[in-house]
Image (cartoon, rainbow, N blue to C red; front, top):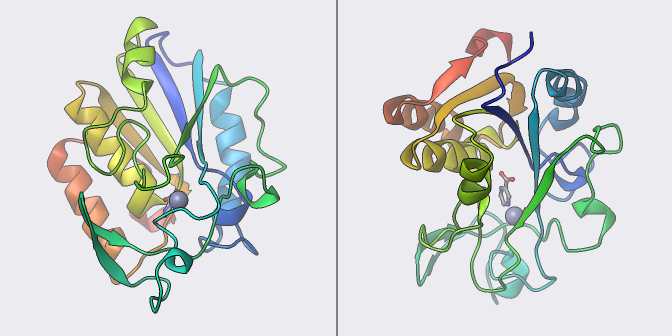
Length: 208
Ligand code: VGL
Ligand code: ZN
């Protein structure tokens, strides 16, 4: 199905560290790759995002003495989950999954590169004020509708989708082309929050 020229596909963090064997593996993360490759054929505008952290990023448990992965800490901008070290700039973990088609993408937007602030959303850092520039790029290209796929449903996809709605875009999350971390029920919470914000879903939950 070819989509209208004002629709863009946003492919979120389909990187080795979020796939099986990766540092922050999302269960069955790599399963989405063939579907995402297929989806690309339908869209005139294609954007990849890439989680891209410096080696001692403040979102890493390793950067906090006495803390472990998945502990919560207070940051200047609010609560932050501490993650295993992942997607370090230039490492193979930060590279896109080798089967993901990347040549046809118009833009690769990197996020999480500021040492003291995490960035789940493709639009804003976790302080919800520092923009990545993606909204401006999409507006200048006349994009109105965003279709999202990628990893992880309950973190980067969720925050990207909600920010996008708030930025005035119509948003469809392709659940069959997403996989979740699901930390303490975070997947269901994310689905509820996205629905409440006006995010639309493609594919039923039951197909996951
Ligand atoms: C992500 C946790 C930390 C994601 C990125 O892509 O969902 N999650 N960094
Ligand atoms: Zn990250």
